[in-house]
Image (cartoon, rainbow, N blue to C red; front, side, top):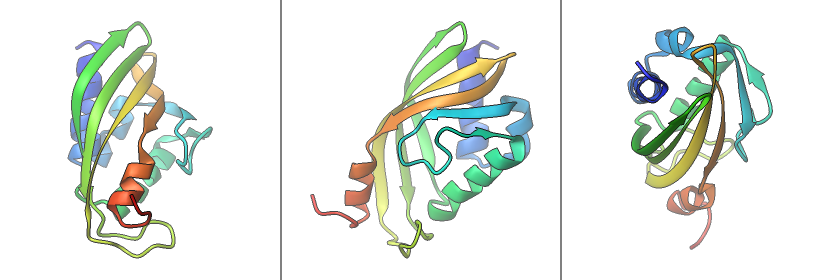
Amino acid sequence: MNKEQFLRAFMTEVWNEQQFDKVAFYVHHAYTIHLDTADPWEGQTLSHEAFKERLRFSFNSFPDMHFDITSAIEEENHVAITWILTGTNSGKIGGFPPTNRAIKTTGLTIYHFTNQKISGHTQVFDRLKVAQQLGFLSN
């Protein structure tokens, strides 16, 4: 399995199917969030347990969160993907109550690899669009 296939399986099993028990299989024991603006874990290096906590945080707000990968580029130590994120806000986001509104946004993530495992990411996506779709901001 090449890195792109490995990453696609990770996105399916861990993110889309919420199989948290697969984290150790896919994720390096030290996972660094290099850039992910407004992510509470930006700049931190996470253990497997901290990575699972980050997953729980995300799914608490959007239990049906789903990523569709639209393109992927693999190189020696990275796989870059573009994606479409969908989900319904049925849990709190920070101090905001659930809106029960659906979101759809796009983004780009570059996943970093160390010793054949995913060891971090650099990510950009339109959080402003998400805030607008949730009704937190006007268009």
